[in-house]
Image (tube, rainbow, N blue to C red; front, side, top):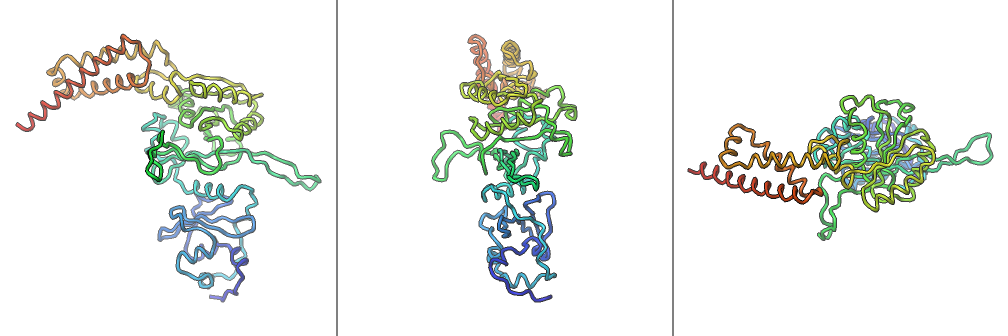
Length: 436
């Protein structure tokens, strides 16, 4: 191996760290690399994300070890090596080949690291809490596996976008021209298990269900049946609510008849403000209105005062696109979606009359299951008693989440209490029989 001349610190920092590591047996993860970041792995399980700053220095971080990050000197120190020894192991002496360009992006270092971390997440898996706990159809989610990511704990990551202004220099123009783009600047992590306490052990007023990394922008999911960039850019619909869960629920409502043929669904931007609309989000909405003037916009904010304010602010941003304001039956569209699946009512047919009729039917069925312990026992033997438990579960949900006419509510409460008493008595009887 040829001897590598000694370099000063500045020159060493600008050596192509990705090429050095490739020469040492690391290999590139093409699926999780981009123009500004390269992910490398080796057979020992080491994983690194390499980037380059505006000065041309090479930086790295280990997505699975918070303290393993920095430059080539940090890399060597963390592995008990000397930089010169690392360079002497190179199979080639030409270390002037750069595959990563200098990053002249003005986004801060935190955003760069956040986006690099996002690249390390796996695609959305079939087992996820958006489906199991929030009722989002797998027919929809399976089309979004490349848009939505999942970390090792099962938390779901959705990218956030803000408006970025670029300075474009053209030879024929004396002054640089400004150009705005809709740019990814972070992600929102939707926790599988909400955090109940802070680091000091103090309970939160409300469980922490989401964490924002990078800059807060519009949570953005692009639904498209095309992989071609030009085709994906032809947006026909824009959905906007206060949370991605609600936006996906509204998307399902609008496409309920297409769930078995999602390939006919037009390109849709599924957006969320994650709460009250911010100034940066208003700018982004104004940009999207100019970018997609022929799109149909569907605003589906919560049924409360905050939702009304968000709706008004959003409407003012869309001067060109057609705006449709849709109100949920419950507080938000995810509650509507869950309700439709629990009560077995089409989400587009949720009305007070239909909901109350469904509740009356369930109440009558529950009363039917309350005809005595022996009746319950017969049903259990026929393996159909689970149906009674399902009905009781629906009645319990309705009592805790819906406004119900007083007379019907009292009847439901009475039947549910009777069912629970008979179920408990039956379980005790079965336990005695097992012991005897």
